[in-house]
Image 1 (cartoon, one colour):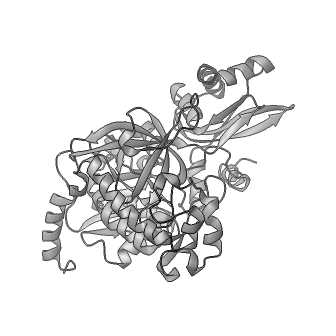
Image 2 (image 1 turned 90 degrees about the horizontal axis):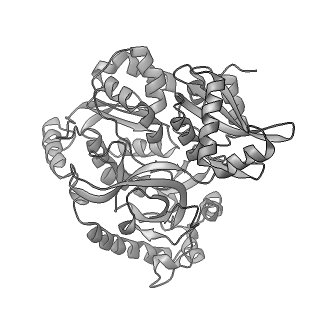
Image 3 (image 1 turned 45 degrees about the horizontal axis):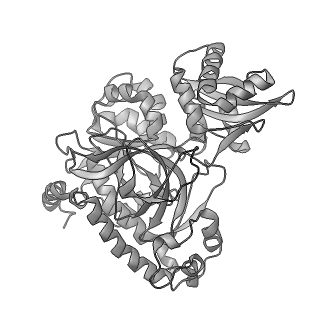
Length: 476
C-alpha cells in the first residue's frame, strides 16, 4: 500500500509524529529492554561455535565474557561453517571495511541485522537530518542524493538491501547507486536545484562541489560523513547549504547505530535497540580502566567503545574508536540519552625514536591550534641521517608558507607533548617535516579508490595507498 502515493503520504505524516518515540524512554528503561534482547541472543549463542569459544553458557553475564577484536572472528568469517553461526549461512552477506587502518577486513553480517538497523535506526536518522530545529521538513517524494561507498561497504550494502526490500517508500534515492563516482558528482552539480537532501562526504562537498557551484544552494537536509573534518568548515557549509549539517556513527561492526542530534550539531546518540554500548575511559594517566555502561558516562570525557550486537555474533568487540560525550540529552527530540561526537581512532600511532607516540588526535589538534588551514593530511615516519621525523603531507584550502606551518605546529606539539619536547631538546633537532600537496590531491586519490573511502587514513597510510596519493598529487 505504501507504493500508492495517497497512502504513503498519510503514513509519512504519521511516522513523522512517532519516529523518535523509541528514544523518549528513560535510559534506565532502555537498558532493561536491552537486557531482555541480550538474553535471547545469548541463548542462541550458547548453541553455536562462536558462542562456545566466547564462553557463553546458561545464565552468563555479559561482563563475564572476554573483550574481543576482529582477529577472534576472522577464522569463522574466512571459513564459515553452519555450526559457528546463529542463522543459516545463506542469510548472511559479506561486508568489508575500507581498509583505511591498514588492512581490509571482511565480515559475515546477517541481512536481517542490516535491514533492522536500516528500518529502526536509519529512518529516524533521516528524519533527524531533515529537522530544522522546529519541525521535520522531509516531504513525500523528496529527492535524496546519495554518494557513498557501494556494496560490499556497509553503507552501500545497507542502502541496497533497503531498496530491494522496499524500505524506502517516502523518498527517491538519486542518482542510480551503481553509477561511477564521477557521474554521481556530476549529477549533483547539474541537478542541485532538484535535490532536497544529500548524503555525502565532507571532502566531496567542500572540494568538489562548493568551489564549482560558487553560490549558496538551499537543501532541506544534509548528512555528511567525517564529522571531525566538517568542524573545520562548519560556517562555510551552513552558508552554502542553507542548513546545519548532521552526522552519525556508522561502522562495519555496528551498522547504522546512532541517530543525529538536532540540538547539538555533529553530535549523535546511540540507538539502544542496536546493541549494548560499553565504554572505557581514555585516560593515559590512569591507563585502561574497567568498562562502564552508557548510564555512567560523563560529559567532556573521551571513551573507547565496546560493542555487543543484539542481532549478530559480534560480542564485546573493541571498535578502537574513541568518542567524546558532549551532552546529556537532546531537548529538541526529547531524548535524555548521552550525546557523543567521534573523537579519533586509537589503534594507530607514530613512534619517534622511541621517545614519543603521536596519534591522529594529537596531530589534528596541533594543526587546528596552529591555525593551519588544512583540507586533509596524512602522517608517516621518514628517516634522514638516522633521525626519525614526523612527516606531514598536507593539502591546504588557503595558502600558507611551509616554514610558518613547521614553526607553529612544532610549537604546538612541544606545548602538548612533553615527550616530543624532550625528544626535540635531547637530540637537538626539529623532528617535523612538512610537505604540501596540490589542491585536489586527496580527492583524486579517493576518486581512484572509487569514491568509497569516507575517512582518509591520517596515520601510517598503507605504502601502496601512499604511493597512489603521491601519484595523484603529481609528485615524482
